Amino acid sequence: MKKLSKAVNEMIISAPSLLWLTVFFLIPSVSVLLISMHPADQYGNIMSGFTADNFRRLLEPVYMKIIWRTLWVSAVSTIICVVLAIPVAYYMIACKESLKKCLLILIIVPFWTNFLIRVFAWKAVLNPEGPLRHWLIQLHIISPDTLLLYNPYVVLLVIVYTYLPFAILPIFAAADKFDFSLMEAAYDLGATRTKAFFKIFLPGISSGITAGTLMVFIPALGSYVIPEMVGGTSCDMVGNLIAERVLVGRNIPEASAWASVLLLVILGLLGLRLTVIIINNFRLKPWNNEKV
Image (cartoon, rainbow, N blue to C red):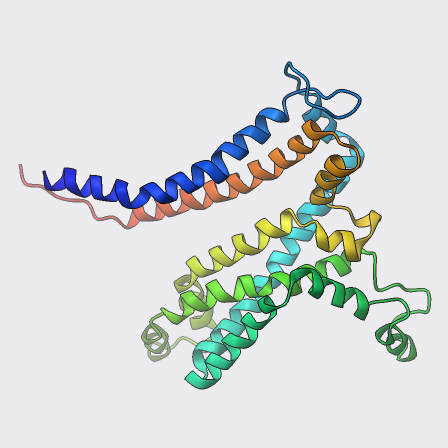
């Protein structure tokens, strides 16, 4: 009876979250996937019947180039964010409590400003007629015909700036719970600071690193505003194609096919992470030697 009541209590506690995920995630995701399998008429409206043409069209060379650009920009920006976030989180843990709070506030402050305004600010800073470009030309760092806007590297820069706090915060949260006596024990056993950092500290905050990686890579994968504003038409990503198919081409099934691909990639990453957690828990779980 106790096990049954415990299971009932767990179901009651989980019911609101499950209902929320079902209504606002599962049902819309399945709907998008079903729409992507329907043909579209000349006006982009959804027609009856099923077809795989919307997915076959994604394999065309021009679209594969956009998919590749989306993947490498998202992956590189995620790596840069995580590499920058780890030493920042390590320093925040090591500093005084008052300074730690100030640094935490400085990381959160950008969220108080609208995302669109922050991207506009980058566009103003990198403007071809702006002072930054003139200074770089005067210092002979760039040539006069070099544009700071409308290239993939600017998109990468703004994505890193935008999503870096999403990498810092979960890594900081994991580092804040880390037992630093393990580092001291490693020093006593002859390990250098570098070796203790990579062998003890990083594995100890692996959950935060994984969470930070997912929190940067997933939104970067579907980024639309940043490539649109600072990248231009030559730096389109999958998010821009979805918006173009909906707003300009009015081809809802093809846009749904693109969205389904992004959704499957994201679910694949989450499923991979869940699999790793289950495997690790299985390895760490002690076997119960019951007496016969």
